[in-house]
Length: 160
Ligand code: NI
Image 1 (cartoon, protein in one colour):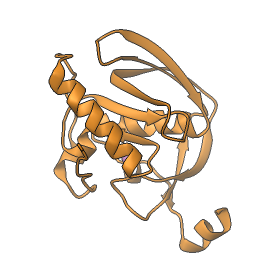
Image 2 (cartoon, helix red, strand yellow):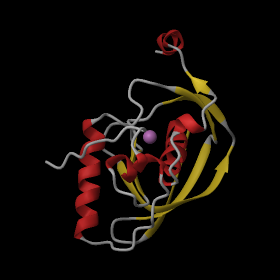
Image 3 (tube, protein in one colour):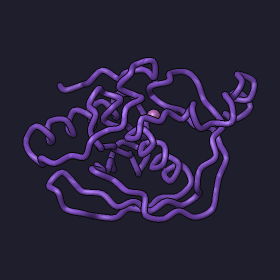
Image 4 (cartoon, rainbow, N blue to C red):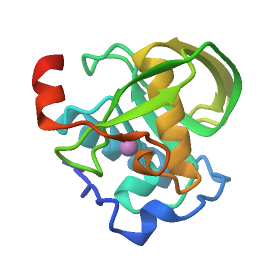
């Protein structure tokens, strides 16, 4: 098992700009495998390396939303966005809370895979939101810094 501890936004690691990945080696693969396990274990949609204390430009997104289609994004860049959406957003590093955040509706990302090969992926709605949220983590930004406000308990109850 390779579960990693998820840091909360009180940890300084969540507020630093991460460095690019340069070595696509066994150590990176172990980190990615551990992050994958940690993401599935925590029932999250996305997980960024700084959330497990690694200050490198890496995030994972469960694009199938069921744990079976997790994409690894290394040295990602947001290439294009379209539209906008305002909705509830949460983060494994801010447990039990949700905020109202405006994001693009559709997002296209370019990134490297675990072997260093470049690929592109696009997502809309929740996945587009997640790409932006995770990419922000790599620049030390937690959603609470860009949200309009936290959602109240009453609002969360009516949403669900
Ligand atoms: Ni997050």
